[in-house]
Length: 197
Image 1: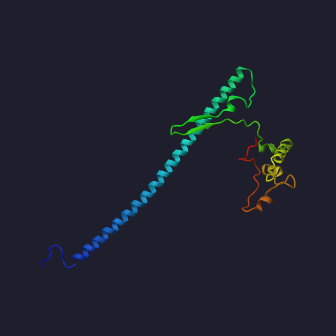
Image 2: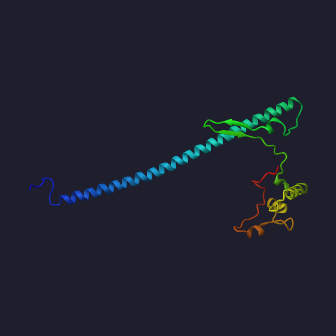
Image 3: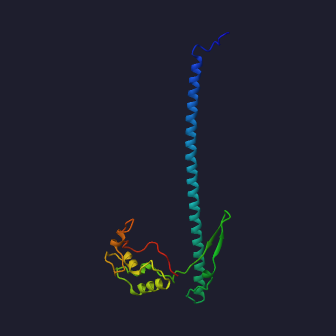
């Protein structure tokens, strides 16, 4: 039997080592490609999320501009007719506008009158004094609505700048620090609060 001229005594081993090296290189390339694909999919997800967020923001700004035009038109009509009073039976209060969007969606624009709502931050004036009229209104509202989980004096203590409770029903740092997790009283106006119609 004749030997192949290019294969020596250890030719089989050398080609086996070369094959292992090629397989290791391929495994490394596959791992790198997989990692890059995962990173690319995360980047695509982030970009699409950012785009959707920007699109939503633009829709909100457009809806706000549309609502502003409706209110300006109502103001001009009222001024022309010498009726400088707004009521809930006017066009802006009775109807919600449906605006079509490019991607087969819609945006609904509804204007709500906030004049009949109570601002909880009005409980305490800028100089830190409790407004008794607002306090009584909120107390009566909570009583009529049978809301017992919120106490007016605790709201006052949350908003007022001092660390003294206004009554036995108030709440300052001592009460909140015993909670789990512990926190302190805000001693500032409420940033987000429910609106009561």
